Image 1 (tube, rainbow, N blue to C red):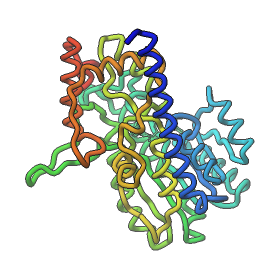
Image 2 (image 1 turned 90 degrees about the horizontal axis):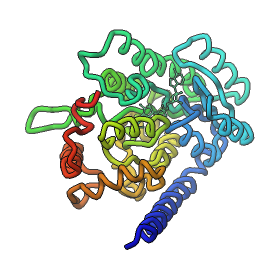
Image 3 (image 1 turned 60 degrees about the horizontal axis):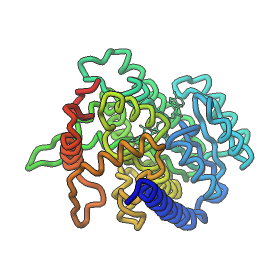
Image 4 (image 1 turned 90 degrees about the vertical axis):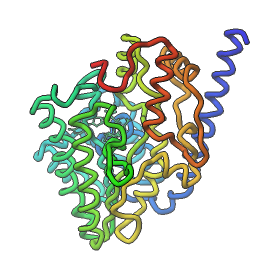
Length: 362
Ligand SMILES: NC(=O)c1ccc[n+]([C@@H]2O[C@H](COP(=O)([O-])OP(=O)(O)OC[C@H]3O[C@@H](n4cnc5c(N)ncnc54)[C@H](O)[C@@H]3O)[C@@H](O)[C@H]2O)c1
């Protein structure tokens, strides 16, 4: 195959993958539009990344969307689109009580109530320790922990304390907390170990573990008030920080783990959970790729980003070509240790002495 032929077959594969992804999103919209039409949804961190995609999905499902973010720089087009669609863009730092009080008043003045709250805003390791995100626990400072807990835990709690009030008053509502699979313990013959502690993500994962525990406890406490509280763990997603991080690793000869998924892989479950209340699914933690597979929304590979910029496409194609094949029936997403081993084998096949895991590339 010539280079031109290879490029053209790559772009038709990418178009076919995108068409299938669009169909799955359309199906989800059809499935839940009837239950979400005209509900008021607040999405924190809604200006970019996963939060923007969730805001767009909820808007397309007919909800009135409030996207709240501490910064709208570079997201002006989305702000206009949101406002044209009868939504509201709010500039608010969720760590700031005064700003949050004002945002709460704005939302109630405009829409009179809140039905859905998506707690998505967070600092991730890649934004706190820009650009690679890797810092071993003993190299972190108290200030790093305070910054991370300030946004991801105390900020989230401040948002919940306010926006849950209309839901409790009318005895109906849904809260969705975005956490991470890095919080999971895995059973191993009577004991437990971490799902993937080699991803080097403290204090980020400590904050996500706190919000996971909060989901179970608060979920039980407010279920009787009609409010569902659930948590979701996304796949490895191409959010706003992703390309900078992947390129920083590439500069030191390392491919930034596996090809990312598109943020839209979170839409079907976001719509489903948004339509819940205390009488439905509540107090639960879902791993999004597994939920998608079990509900007919494709396996993990179906949601991978096949439309990367050329330099990133080159990195991930090279990695995938060097990766040993491993598939198993009934496993929509390979266990993380298997992924880690395949990734390390691919990096070794590429002749690299270094790889992304294990904190070797701080
Ligand atoms: N991208 C992934 O692979 C991945 C995986 C697991 C979990 N998550 C979670 O998904 C959620 C979204 O992250 P993302 O990857 O889209 O990152 P992102 O950085 O692209 O988006 C986060 C958004 O939160 C906003 N934000 C940060 N601090 C804020 C504050 N104090 N007040 C208001 N807004 C604030 C940012 O401005 C940004 O728009 C986070 O909860 C993250 O932990 C992401």
